[in-house]
Image 1 (cartoon, helix red, strand yellow):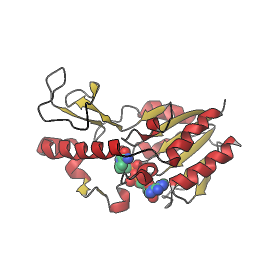
Image 2 (cartoon, helix red, strand yellow):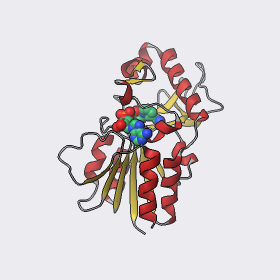
Image 3 (cartoon, rainbow, N blue to C red):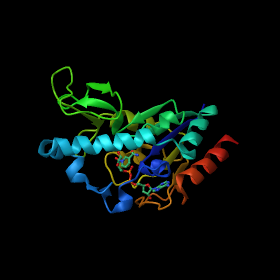
Image 4 (tube, rainbow, N blue to C red):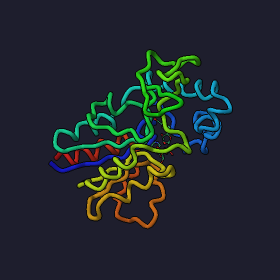
Length: 227
Ligand code: NAD
């Protein structure tokens, strides 16, 4: 079976009602990233950070997968598919994909603020201040903040080196190390990019560019690949 590797960013979930942040001048839901998505922000104002991610979790639980998530799941009929996502939502899983690597964590789980390996399911949408891990530390969202290590990056890079076909959907390629994964795809493997505003791809001219929203563009490519 041929291997398809799909790298997704916030853009694939935009049509499910979850906002990207590059589309609104670097703000994410009206917040400056430095104030809500860094270890410094957590030290400065843990209540604000906790509340920010509680609100994001609520939105994720209220959202549904869209046609792009569902179409990617259909690729499994004919290919070995791995989705590497920068997203912290669970829409790929709910859309039916069975092999999803979350580079930046997943908001439906909590983690110890002392040891990122200790993660737990969350009851409902909220992590409350005072809820602690087994070591007695406050629980926070299981997401990778700016300035934190990305534990899954090596596994993701290895997966990219084995791609027969590569598909990039809805990422501004502005967040590293995720953006660097593109460089691990073997020369000669067809590479597609689907984004209504194709980001700067450096001197890589080998991408097949589909300048469309995810629901349209992904569905079209999947039809073609399943033919
Ligand atoms: P980004 O916000 O930097 O870029 C979004 C990209 O999606 C842009 O290139 C934009 O043109 C494109 N886009 C917008 N609407 C689209 C659509 N309908 N279809 C396809 N593409 C569309 O996102 P990023 O590159 O993923 O980096 C942002 C970081 O923010 C990630 O690390 C991620 O963890 C986090 N984030 C996650 C979510 C989520 O989980 N849903 C949402 C916002 C931000």
